[in-house]
Length: 198
Image 1 (cartoon, rainbow, N blue to C red):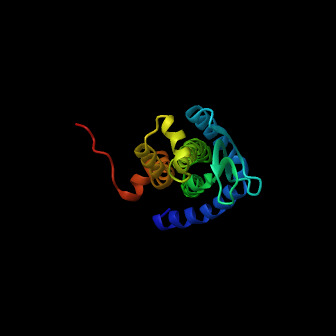
Image 2: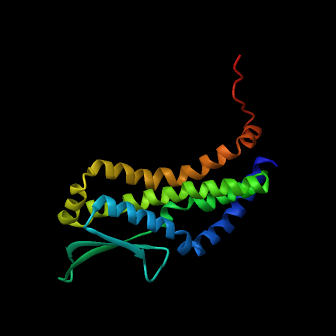
Image 3: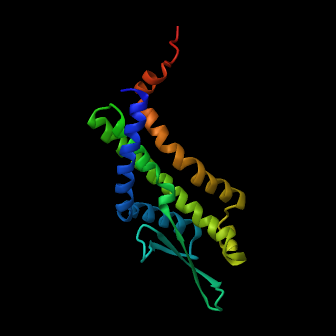
């Protein structure tokens, strides 16, 4: 298979993967929600209440806290906000397209997708946790910021980890997984081979 054919097949498989990924997002988002909720609960303690699926769009996550917030309409209620885990999980259909287009065996493709799903699941959990902490620290005033500060998390760490979760990990994770799983194919396309030790 030529490189052009690999790219074309990857794009076609990726479109199919995006459809599956989006329509099944309410289900494959469940472990993300459970893991992120547990991490936030252990990190923030009492001020964190829970994380539930959004009633209108089940693929969105609704973070609920016990932090009282003064809303613009004059009401004072516990603070809640929405996080979209799909922002951090688009690597799954990307990996699906790359894996399905490669000339590996079906067993190897399945193994690569399974390992890739586990890695991208962790990327999503990372993104959801740090976006939640960033939202509390920077978007809802001193009371919410104080809760995060009391947990011992500095603002600089939140900014760094949030940027990694948004810009770096979702894009790089599927490509690195595919490269590691298909290194022989990469060598064939590039002509590069590791130097032989004397």
